[in-house]
Amino acid sequence: MTVIQEPAAGTTTALLAVRDLSVGVRRGRTLVPILDSVSFTVRAGEMVGLVGESGSGKTVSSLAAMGLLPRSLEVSGGAIEFEGRDLLAMDRKQIRGLRGAELSMIFQDALRCLNPAFTIGDQIAEPLRVHRGMSRSQAHARAVELLELVEIPRARERASAYPHQLSGGMCQRVMIAIALACSPKLLIADEPTTALDVTVQKQVLRLLDRIQREMNLGVLFITHDLGVVTEICHRTAVMYAGQIVEEGPTEELFRRPRHPYTHGLISSIPRRGEEARRFGSIPGTVPRAGHWPTGCHFSSRCPHAQEGRCDTAPVPLDVAGPAGPDDPVPHRVRCVRAGELSLEGVA
Ligand code: SF4
Image (tube, rainbow, N blue to C red; front, side, top):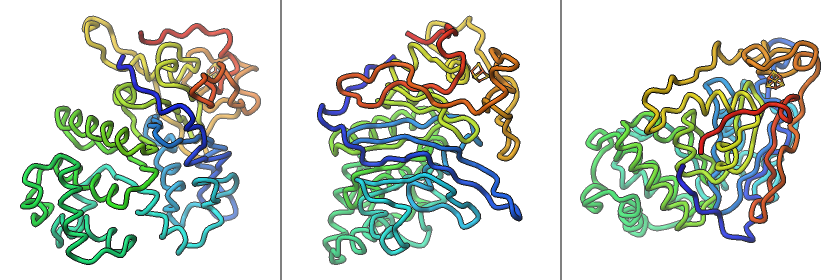
């Protein structure tokens, strides 16, 4: 497993703190829960992975943090703070002032997110003109610098290109340049490499890793690919059916998973030198919102479920291990049998 350099000591204050966030979708008089008391933090200089299968609530969590929840969803409890400021209490204008300037987001399908009618130089320059008040020529010069930062060759020339003239990997680099244009403190990357082939995916991950360290950025990296998380994330939070089920330093979480769902995800990662090993799989699918089991949300798929213990009452997220000297967030797990199960991790 890759050894990931920890953020600088002393960077203990959270840039982003999501606390007990609950979100639901309105169906008549009922609010059907989609997120159930989700809590996590991201510090400056820290890359936090948010992982889980489709339907676990990763993207809704990230959209809530950006103030981009669709109108059909309602926040029913909890708080989202950016540098101690309550995002949920801000009006649209205040949120818009933060978004793109201090908070930024990279989406998964770069080609669809870029505007086909404008050059990439113009698209990178736009947030600089809106948030930083730069003139057209200043913003264009900075756009070229940003294209160089994201390692696009012949940056000056490429600034005049339209999105359809670039490859998928190049478009994703442009999206990263747009997100970084105003030197944000926090970047939310929602499956930024999913649409790319494996080689380009590696290049984009290396780029993000380098930029995150150089700019001391806090990054929330959303993915369903645990292999990616081991490469670049300091800490990892695992989501399942609207809840965080395990959270901890990435290395510890992979060496010693405490939750059967985390264990199932880890068992399904192909590993070099273990070609003969049969990959594990988790039977079934994530239950839809409104159809979560009583008690542990994972109980319908868990091979360790026990009647009368796992299916009676909500399971809290408990501390499973002490916080490290450089990591104020302890290893936490949501499983009534966490202390008695011995789940194999990866060395
Ligand atoms: S609480 Fe029970 S069902 Fe849920 S993960 Fe733990 S053992 Fe499995």
